[in-house]
Image (cartoon, rainbow, N blue to C red):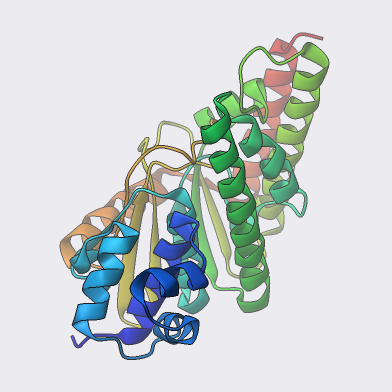
Length: 298
């Protein structure tokens, strides 16, 4: 397979966003024009010497920029931007990543996430400021991803775990410990509303949306598989949104290596075969909510 400058440009943009640098800053540091940076990001031809300089500046390996075998990503901003790019051309997306999927969430979900993610920022001023800037970038990317999904409507296969949902119903959308009881109850209410939204999707079964509810455990590290024509791309990530959020620490991977994709597809096939679906899954979750309601303090 030859070099795809369009895909290189997508990675350049994603890693630039992850560093927080503007196109102007990149241009100034490399001694090139801002127009050249934007041209590279849009798929223009770029010399190998310039790519080496960009890789060094962005603190990423040249193979990762070129998309050779596996991309390693330590910035959640970069990772979510790469997902946005992959979703733009995907015809089918398989999601196994926590109790809630961004693309199938309610219209209120991103706003809830914004407050939640900012709560995860440490007290130390410099780190807190950086985290809050990252949250602003992530929220912008998440809104774009939802808009892209609503516009394109690729097929979604989403596997979720009943155990993850129980934990979310108990904990609510919280990003820090020791939350006052009234605030916690409000966060639990928001979590329940998101689960009820998922139940409605299960019961209505809209075209292009397939949700499987696994009553046992799912792999603790989330992954997604993007299918575009004959190409399949796998993303594996420690970054989480919603329940027990993590946007600060971890290393995500994106690869189209056939063996890695095939092994994860086998996991999906097994989990899908074991999962509850449609109205059966909806009834199970409604019973689960009723059970959890009985356990929660009033």
